[in-house]
Each structure stands twice: as C-alpha cells, then as structure tokens.
Image (tube, rainbow, N blue to C red; front, side, top):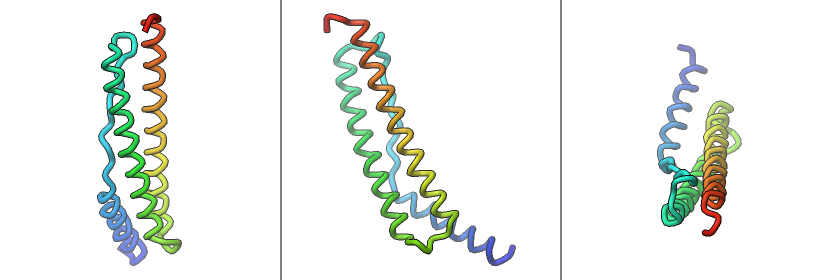
Length: 113
C-alpha cells in the first residue's frame, strides 16, 4: 500500500470515528391518515417535532466536524461529510412531506374533524 492510500485509510477511519460522535436519530414511522385517529396524529406530530430537533442537532454536529477539519481536510473526507449532511436533509424533507400528506389524508377521510 502506498503512502497516499494509507493516509486515505487513516483519514476515512478518522472521519468515521468522528462522525460516530454525531448521533443520528432513529427514523420514525408516520401513521396512515386514512386509518389513524386524531390522537394518533397528535402523538405523531410530537414524534416528528422530536425527530426534527434530533436531526437539527445531528446536522449541527456534522457541520462542527467539517469546520473542525478545516479547509485542509482531504477531499474524500469533505465528500463524506457533505453526503451525510445532504442525506439527513433529504430524510427530514421526506418525513415532513409524508406527515403532511397523512394529515391531509386524515382531513379528507374525516371532514367533520
């Protein structure tokens, strides 16, 4: 193994180790608006808010890790961290969209509520 590959392995290992300090929240399940009760949706809303707060903390941690690495961090490290950031944002958007869709479905299925 040449020195460049060895250093890449060390940096990638360090990136994995430091990102372990950033706690990624567990994915939540959004209830089906067609069959859910209002109470279940209210509970889900609280879970979504808690999840979003956890993801915001995760994103802040990833950003701190990237800032701590500085401009001299290897391109591979930056790429990994940007990918983690972007994946987290995409997941947050998917959860928010799913929850909003299910609330709309509930409203359509229960017009009096």
